[in-house]
Image (cartoon, rainbow, N blue to C red; front, side, top):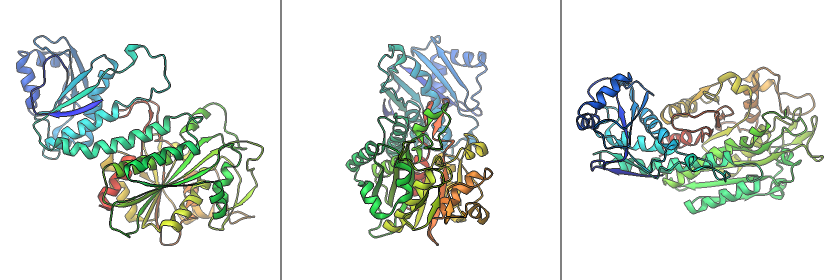
Length: 495
């Protein structure tokens, strides 16, 4: 779908999306439409009890006096409470009904739709951003779609007098590219996306200016990555480690590092998962997907910061060569780990990946993302990702980035007690703790591989990488969670 901005009046005969506030006078565009329909619009809104309440939507077809094929009214709530994120939801909610029609073009009447906090240009750009994110589809393997199942919308024009709307959207458009890339990666089936093919997709990002390095099993064996390689040793697919570098900041300055768990498919290994729901484990690489999308977004918008993204890519399979419960493996750090459950594999991948990242790049800050534990879903449902850190300043920065980006975080405890719970009788540590506090002990395990003095946070995104239903700016499926969060963290703290 092509997005454009125009100051000219909307051409007749197109579908219209009209945002409306709950309080105060109608926007200039809404008032003009009311006049053009000789009051028919107002009567229709009253009859349908449309007040402009947030998330309220009303589709009008064949309105008397209107030449437009259909008019979609979208509630924006109260002006005083309106935010840039609300503008995105307006765009997403406005375009969603059109994706089920054969409309080819639509116009958003954004003239006069702004507040003191959210200017006209910002509002228009965010509407466009939300519309683009909501229009995402993953249909590449659907070969028998009927015509009425295929969205026909080819162009969305944002009608606004704001001269800066297009410029503001340009950076958001690159962030959307990153979100779309992550959604694509998370949506791919595991016979298509596996460590080698994932690494190849990362190499394609060199076209954006990223430097991409791929390590194979032999290189990782030399480095002593016994944990990461242990997870993948039961798979016919070779494990990979990928580093993506964007050095857009001060030359020689220490970078920020993002590290992602990339388990391209997780059977649980010898500690086999139950069959029902195992198909969902194609998105157990959601952390690596988020890091890859974030790096694409940063490179796409030419971020003025030094950032590296590192992802550990494996498959966890129950082959005869797979690691077993009670095996002891040696990490790159030299610490030994007793494997009690082979389904607690993501932390093993991350342990070696974060150690290598520190050795290689000496980052000033390191943030890892992983679909790590079911326990975080029990704690936070599918509403928040868990934030674990002992760095209060970093926690505050990430929570601020969460609020600004719309990727929600909730800080969870990480204390000495959680580290004590993973002590082993036969090795330096074990890869699982007791049933209680499972997300915190998983975070503590990764923390065992974080060097003293290193600023670090762990984000458990297990409940956020996939949506089971449509949301205002994200259809059912891969969410792209984390891309906007990481981009906003860099924008607010490193540029």
